[in-house]
Length: 292
Length: 242
Ligand SMILES: Nc1ncnc2c1ncn2[C@@H]1O[C@H](COP(=O)(O)OP(=O)(O)OP(=O)(O)O)[C@@H](O)[C@H]1O
Ligand SMILES: [Mg+2]
Image (cartoon, rainbow over all chains, first blue to last red):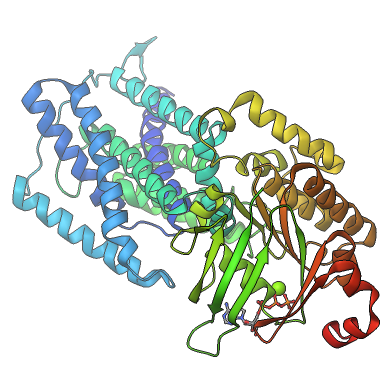
């Protein structure tokens, strides 16, 4: 019982990070109609910047802010000056360029900072609170949950309640119609990438203190699990990313706790397979497929 | 509110023969002009090239004497041009209200917020009663007629100076067509909106237009007052085939 409570609560905190990263994949999928296979590498670059800023200034918050800014900038640069130059009529060139980008970024980080793990300290204690003798969330887990909730809430307001959000959605669903209504679609695509990579960077930043530390591949497993979550949720659906992220996080935590860490990826894969067998477009995919 | 002038416009896809060849046309301020012609005559191509969406090889498009040729579609919208494209161009993932709001979102500052926008949107709900009832419904749940009403309302809510319409009556029941064209005529009369209306529904289009222009083989082959074109069987037969 104690074990179950503990696993559930850590699973929730890991799931929040996963959901955040899955949401970043959904945002970029909506903007570009493509899965960004470079998301992990692009997310870890700002985390290195945050690490450097925090080391230099002593402020975690300054580091966090710089990760968001650098993430957004990196998203804009990659979209404007790299992916926009790639032929768009079929997805393959974009995927190949993304894989190339992963190699360049990760090798670049290894050259600049060395390939080793760097220990990263969390801004709050990672020792779980004890309630009636049962270990539950740590203060850092709580912090992660709060940050994830705030960011998701803000994104939901941005997308659903503002004029920019309306334009972002319209540009993703119907680019030509949107242009005819005066929406600057290329700008919306860039903005989508900026939001996506900033969100992914934040997720990676939250993850790093709970893992082995910072290295160029630190977000790779996060990407794989978040990708699974995004697909389970329906790739197009922010709500799906949130729900599936939490489910995958809790599942991985339970399987790690009761079986072994090595089994967790298999469990995620099994879940993904079952969902895709039952609902090929994911749990929260839009009912009506777009034809025009 | 604005005069649209088309000078020696040549448009072609790929490296095939041009679809429009040196086309000349003026749509004066406040006029309602019906654009007629057989299937494949180039009506859609003309309207799309006015918005910067078709490959223009040569010629110019002027709005009140200002050359639009180098402007992007988005910037042409900001200059006062609007197109209701062929087919139901509703964004089906968005609600009716969101589609309408999208029509004003390029406007800067106060016009795109609060009372001003609500007033403009409210006016559209008055014009199109079925939309008012379904304002929170998703676009994909609308009927064909409702979608076309929404597409027209969404263009009008942006208060364009020149409105281009591509076959608004396609696939609609006569009653709905009459209603749509009626709204169009009233809006043009009330606001001085300039309208270029491409239609296969010749009778309907000529009933609301001042002038009829017939396209054939990439050129304007007839340009007459609408009443004359509608009333004269010889003209109708020669240019419109009925
Ligand atoms: N994207 C395109 N690529 C190549 N050719 C095209 C394209 N769009 C139109 N055409 C050709 O241009 C010509 C004019 O087409 P357009 O759609 O402008 O005609 P239309 O007058 O609107 O016809 P309809 O009344 O059937 O809508 C046709 O011969 C068509 O095949
Ligand atoms: Mg046409």
